Length: 285
Image 1 (cartoon, one colour):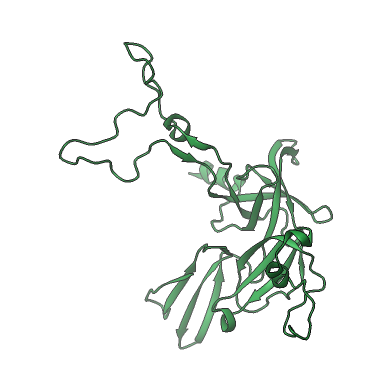
Image 2 (image 1 turned 180 degrees about the horizontal axis):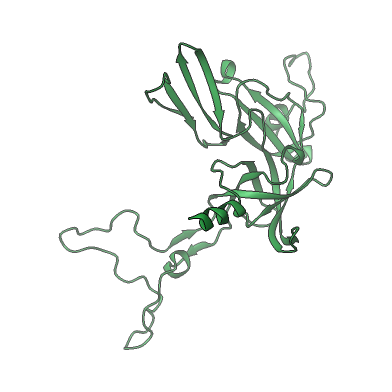
């Protein structure tokens, strides 16, 4: 959901910042004002229209740049995706676009899912059914928050061509599940000595409680437990290769999740200067 934080000064009456909510990915934030010049809205941190896509992680490889330097990249099968639903503030209370990805057999979906995807025909009993003739049955659905206006049409296809080489993106995925892990693997703890009489305590975490005055373990203490299997975002990755014909994207660096894992690609929230610019800044300082 949206969170509004007010701030005074220079005729500005508020600032809106939105972040990821359950099942939705925000593509930017903005500021609105109301002064003598009128009411206005300025968009930050994303595209005015939909610039995001779903994909599957293929794996890692390397490419060579113009200086013949090896660049480690992650190849992603990005799209094609279809616009399943367009949400508007008047009808849904917020502006978003729902994308579907990965074709699947109709028998693997329920009637409710097929109806939402526009796969059921109209009939006398159901004359209000929404039919999307160009949309196939799809496995994954995800929402992207977008600016009001200039929204795509339902049934429209989205490909990897929405990104260009050099763009900065955030890639969201689910980390590999590691199961129940000990403190050494989960938190990089150091083991205890193997000598001086101990038999099986060299990988144990040791004492965890406080003194008798506190007499409890503080919340958040690093201990053995379930590792992995959670949502992870790799931020500010550079797009190195775009191949819309083969539905491929290559981004510099690692991407969370296993091979064939679902990932969400969207414009970077935190833009950084290029590597060359950083080096120039350091040399001047």
